[in-house]
Image (cartoon, rainbow, N blue to C red; front, side):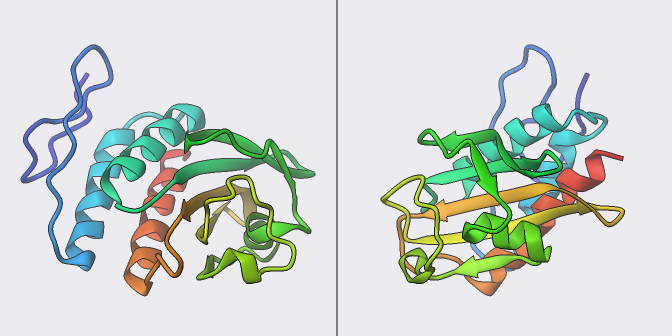
Length: 178
């Protein structure tokens, strides 16, 4: 069953048995992220399963956003964050809410954009090559679902445009759960 066509792309993503073609994204950061969010919506359209959607969105973002060494989801189990689908090196399995950038995003329910993770005293180094990080909390109806975590080897990798665009992709994930 097709997910739906996204204007300007060569092939529509399909759920069963058809190859996936990455979108050709604009050079303008604002347009690029608007296109990425539209493609993400088409990819998760009609699919309520959080594991399937987290897996596909992690792969989509890792393949289309440059200079990322880790992209993935941590889900809140009522006590701590537990690793979910991701793209990158093996990750920390459990993160307490009182530690690290992911814990801060979950605890405060605000996006954390860190230019230099080595300057964060309680940073949890799952991948020693990571130098900057963006973590978007996933909240639905006031309840914490988890976080969307993105790491880069580049110091100060994430801009305001990246933050807004990746928050939009995170919102696509949350909206698909309804």
